[in-house]
Image 1 (cartoon, helix red, strand yellow):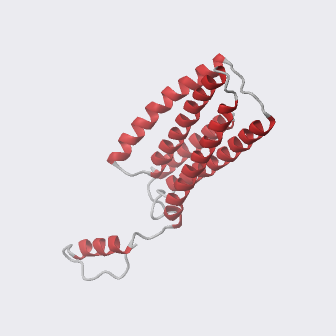
Image 2 (cartoon, rainbow, N blue to C red; image 1 turned 45 degrees about the vertical axis):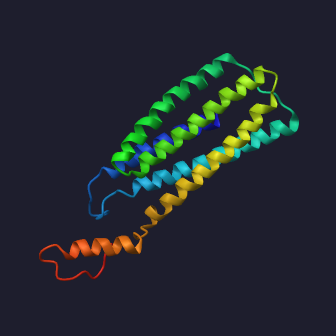
Length: 193
């Protein structure tokens, strides 16, 4: 349930960001709206962190209390369908990112990859619980929570700089300044933003 709520919120944030980023520059945003995408990616990163904490908390409580996984076949079928759907999303977004970097698309890929892991591990945990290893589901959830939390941190780290307007590394700025200096009519370069 936590994963599905996070998916809805992430999807909404990413849809908003893509729409905002496509808007042309205006009086209030003279440099355009491109920072909406890394902002939405930060929302996805925060939601991944919340999901990781919630799953970790539930998994640890299940391990400590000795709770067993519920073995509902319809739930397993839903997870299997989600794994198939998210596999397609991961493939398409990875292919699109190979053509052009895009913070919102990368956040979608990270979210879909996390969902793929959640669904896959849920199916593995379901199978192990059916084979009389009920605690395996909770231990897999601990591993998944750690992975999702780390991927959220990576996504946040990548996008904080974009939201804050961080400059390119010095070597890249020098390269861009040299390219600009070669343009006919350029007398000098005072600032490079």
